[in-house]
Length: 346
Image (cartoon, rainbow, N blue to C red; front, side, top):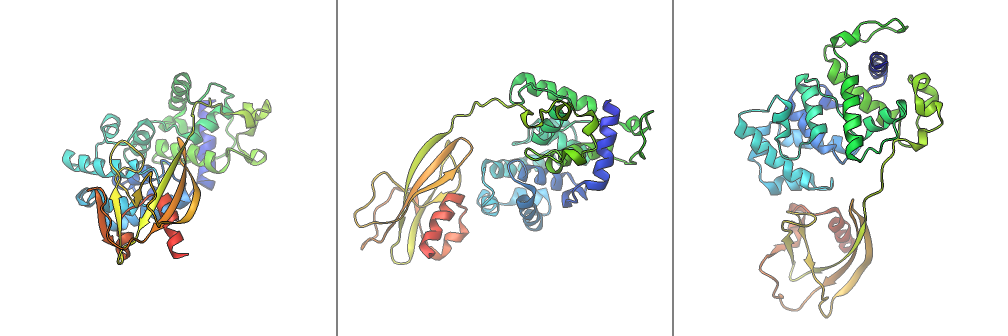
């Protein structure tokens, strides 16, 4: 069954796989960069960022030589900025190692790289026999094999990881089986192609909602379809408590300048810049926007935005930096701040 499952996906992938630029190379740097960008980003959005990064820093040595501010500025708009900081840190790790590590353990030693990302890089760049397990893989496996173990539990993660590894094709998997009626895909990189095939299958065929079951090549062996449980799988326990947080920002404008500061460690948006964040709105400030909602993974932010144009330059905490308003675009900012700043030009 595992043999036929892998072959079916490889056949499907040959006809339906997405043509993505990082799949046209075996360069581990380009592949690693794409995987970090796509960790919390859809392909359509991440593609453009990958191209910009590759154009500005074509090699890991060049990325490592950049400043963190430069990397954060290039990353602006993608969110989850810890990925950008980890990317920059890992680039310097790679340079210090003398090159990209070529073992799973070596790849996992890079900051920001977990089991999935290491398996993806290892299989795509070095043909390492490691199965990827991401959201798409969880969905395809849970539906096809009728697995109801919650995917966000220790038991579930272990069960799916073992199954994914068992299904991973080898050179022998490409040999015809007694029940195979279709031509066997010919590939020099069966592990990489299979990993890409199951991820693409989940992303475009076996989608979270409205999957294309009638045109699915696995429909006859899919337990979820047979048992009318497609919408019920995969199972995920609801454990995340989302909290609300209120923020009050004041845009200080004095003689063509404004004040910003860089957020420190231990909170959201580390290393990014924002206007004056305060609990006390200064006298004379004008409310521009109220209750602007911004949703993060673990919390919902609601921000008020004020404009203050004092007659004299105000005294602010030492970590605030006075810059020309025309220089604002040179500083990496969270998406919420970008939205608030748009009010100034409306």
